[in-house]
Image 1 (cartoon, helix red, strand yellow):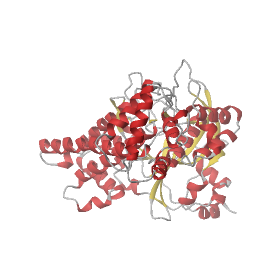
Image 2 (tube, rainbow, N blue to C red; image 1 turned 180 degrees about the vertical axis):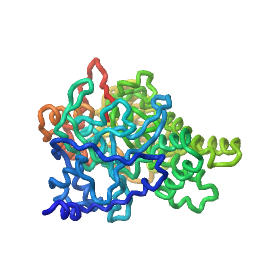
Image 3 (tube, helix red, strand yellow; image 1 turned 90 degrees about the vertical axis):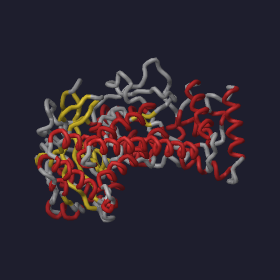
Length: 491
């Protein structure tokens, strides 16, 4: 098969609508070629949904595309500019090691970004070399696919290639490039960049583009830009609730890591709770606990406020009235988030109808879990399996009293006990990507070049609600140690 034929048969169907924004928003630049790329992971099911041919995707021609050595027909590589708050401090940012190839138009009529990450320097790289490590790229692959299986909006990973080159961070690391798929890479920080450094016309162009791409139903609204803000708030309220319900800690909720689309993006210092502790922080950089598990809703509202402020010139000609629109809209975030979280917690406990005392019942369990340092996922797993004796708290009087209250609450429902347990199975994952299991897979892949551990992990994570025998070993938390688990920025 010729190179030209391989490109045609692969199924790439690119458009480049982002490049039709003012060039203020990006720099056209090709990826930097690498010496000896090797495909280490291909997401064939995702490729199929994108309309791509799996056989061709595994060819040497496609490998060259995933490595950035060749540009697909119709692609127009560029690096996006943005500027936002990192741990509360405003900085000029941008794609320092990523290249947006373009937007794949799928057979289902969807438009998704195809981005290479770790693909070389750009004008926004500052002092870095534009490269990424194999471990962090595989980590993003594992966690983003796990989040997808959990039903949480997320970017996804199509492929990971090793570059055949090493680079130096704290230590020498093997290089890699990840191909990321996203509804788009428009971030809160993209709007902050336009607001801080652009004209009102450029800001309006970005807002209009975002509305057309992500919220086309808002066209008929009287105030389209207020509708944009409200829709973004709605998606964030749902996303953060889903994070909290599975014990996910993003770790670096800077405004450049928050997507307008409502997808989870950037999997650097993220991790999942083992022991339930609302103050859990995993990121080595988060020494003040800014992005602790319990503060994620608060930080989401803070980020949304920064996003809303960028829209002020578009919301109303009177700044005071525009500010009032923002204040009212942000207040709705907490209402929507709480409603989503409460509904999700009811489902996790098999409760199908609302009662006023439900929140007290839920917080009662969470307080016990915190007091007795119970495992978050496995507590709900044990209740789902009707095995309360498997929890750390079974021999505690206050837990048994809570359990009796919960059973009485279920008894007041018209639905059967079987219905309640099925509801719980649908909302309580049997497994999550346990931190020690992820590290085990990465160590095996990066140090020993053995990808079998990662493949087995991905297989059991693909259906987290299966409650299958194969998942039992992966449900166990790591042994408690004196040193808390820490993650590091690198993706």
